[in-house]
Image 1 (cartoon, rainbow, N blue to C red):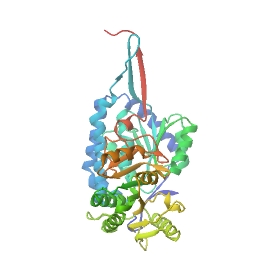
Image 2: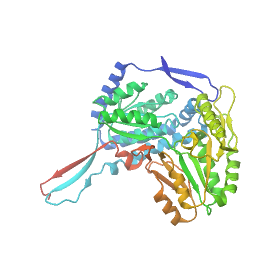
Image 3: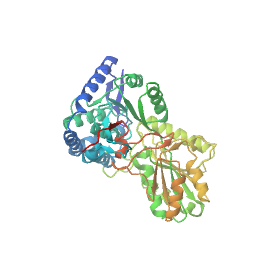
Image 4: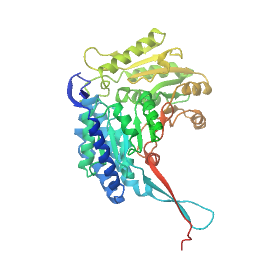
Length: 460
């Protein structure tokens, strides 16, 4: 049965379908990955650097084709899609540029004679389970550091972007990556579990829902495999009474509505000091209305459809339940009629812990505003979530910013800005947002063998 499908969310039309592979085909893929690993791990560092740089350039050379593909498959506005391709290229280039430093031996201070060093080495074939909301970027975060390190990779991509999944493998191999080092696999959840359990596979990385993360972590734990999880987020944005309200409102609107609000690090809970609450909410609603759902293939479009009509309908149901329970609608949006998956910006207030929406990750162009009077109340509201991915603080008082940063239960904090990704910055969260880090040297070391070499002979 064909279960990987390209369905254009802007039109509702099914454009292509792909079958899952057989269990025997998966076994062949794992064998190929293991074989490729043993040769790739021994390749000269200069070769790996050169290929990574070619991969970066290949992304840039094919930018329009790559961007148009994800615009068609998951609805990302094409200007944002081009930005995603460029960010992916930067990630591959970062590991090409910094590989020598990342692999450098660490010399330890020891007692006694001789030397002790820690080497950074690969561990073997890995499985990556990747999401649809950033089809190239999410893969680059996992693939680039591990290819650089010398691991081989099998990727199970999301079911609604199969052509992008195929295009990634094609892009990497056309840049000179040896066959088997990166393999796209159209496999089921059951086959993912089987692959994790296979003794040839040494680790798994998943970006997705907390439910999927729990399932993968269970299998990984049972089989003693290293696991990195990047899961959901309900990121707070704190606006204090001394903040630049224009800057904060613009940042909150842009971050909440980027990629149609379908980002784990999107601002979802906006926590505002009572003294500036009315003015700020008015500014925020005005800026959100500047984002109008329209054709994602047009460069000027700033808000495309959700990933599917089903996603739009489910979001509409969640909002309807919240309003029925007493939430106020500051800015009324909603799902479009017909087969399209467009959803207009929505802003809610008066959401309390008795409502399901209070702790639900809203994956779409919907924001929630809260009020606070004291710094302690702001911190309590921000931390009152099962998630702990990122947070933003808007204030001109850097002492306050430092205090609040220390009290927030998140993996990342941004001061007078919203979350922005860059190759040199580690990415990851705490609580039900997962564990482990991607990007920078932290991501490079997640699936590395930090091998101690102790030589008791005194060196000349």
